[in-house]
Length: 627
Ligand code: ADP
Ligand code: MG
Image 1 (cartoon, rainbow, N blue to C red):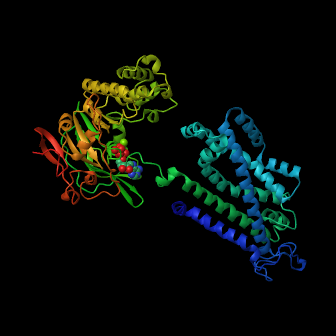
Image 2: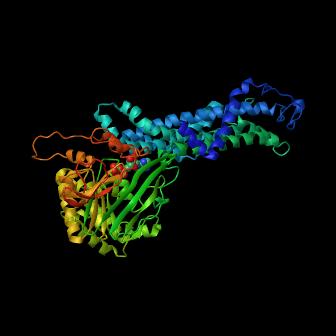
């Protein structure tokens, strides 16, 4: 709640609107307690008195009634009627919309065609017709204004409910045996409630205006009782000779409607969860860079990540997701990056092409070099020309990375034409060849499939084909097989292995599974809490892990036919990256931890372990001695 208010008040105009409407509300509430004349006391001897004369602060009207008193009582009435109308319209409209959207089919059709009929009439005409049928009076004006606003709520809420009603959590509720009423009330209503609140806050002002309009025409409040619209209507005849009688209620209507609308817009922005974390802005096309330290020299690998630091700055908190990660790959080489969920693998991978969302992501140190060129802070045009062309990504869930409404052939062709000026026919031929390369059976007919018509393994093959579309030099695969079953996973791995041998691809393969690394990768880097803790040739590390964390990770992998062995889960949880300890982040979970482990940062030590050179480990008490 306090977060909501803080967000709301960051928007100056909304804050201003909130303060004005709050003052008006308080005045309306305490009107009966104020020492005012009765609003209906006439005094024809003192008609049309100007403001500040004869003891009347705002003057008098055509019957000598005190304008201030009439204004406050009228405001009270107008606010009450407008808000009551908004509540009634919101309640009825939302109920109709949620029922239509949830049941769908014939129910939806009947209800929504009725709503459409209401919408077919011009707005104010319909209100006039309703009041004409019911007879003039404030209550009937309220009913008319509420009725003409019902379709607005019904349409809005139905649209949102239709999207929600097919979602898995509603299916789950149905499977658990909940009845329709309970699903509507406990599953759908909480999800649409923010929308209802927002729709209401943005329409209250409008409804106050409509009620005032009906009263102005003499169809709402009846004399001597007056709301703001009624006051305006009575003052109409004296508009030229005594303008203050119409200016007073006019200004009040303006203040009310403006302040409610400003506040309503602010409420809408503050309630939207997508705007909440993203600081009311969209991510930029490339990650922000604020580098303080020196930029490391190039060493000549195809793609190298050098002492990379990527952080998330959220409010006053700093999440240090990547803390000085260095990696390098050569053509034809496969480098595995392994670690528990949350260790910073994805953020490292996304930092390479500046794909970490900013805000809140910031690259604060290090370099990323492709063929020697530093990409950190490179112009957006350069990053764009490399993304998907020279350096391509494969993500974990192809269903969310493929566009659901386009055929896969068109999406593949688009991946090609985005970088190369080839014609539609040629792009399609290439797409066909790509599908054949990733061993999709019967590609001639599959090319016209939509993503939902394919199985998970097929979709991931399409994802790989898309990454291969422009014959890249580097592929960064972020857990591409995690969502697949083991047989499909084995096929995909052997496919990637063939591709890198045939095409000389460099692959950075991110996973949390040592079994996968053993099948595919030449070298492996083990990540923990945003740092690499061990690196070396895969087989050597599998045979003789040096870092206790690596040893525990390997102990977690079951072996088929390896006899009975307890799978040792690692106790405890990874540290949260907004509060990292000064020394080794793994120490609290480590059986070999010593006194010096937590005191100061521990350096990566390079050398040979168990006779194999080219290894490095970040540990002062490793499992295997480093030479
Ligand atoms: P993984 O190794 O599972 O791929 P990630 O690279 O996705 O892990 O995340 C690394 C760390 O960065 C996690 O601890 C996560 O909490 C943090 N993180 C990721 N995105 C954000 C964000 N937008 N705001 C704050 N922290 C984030
Ligand atoms: Mg990840």
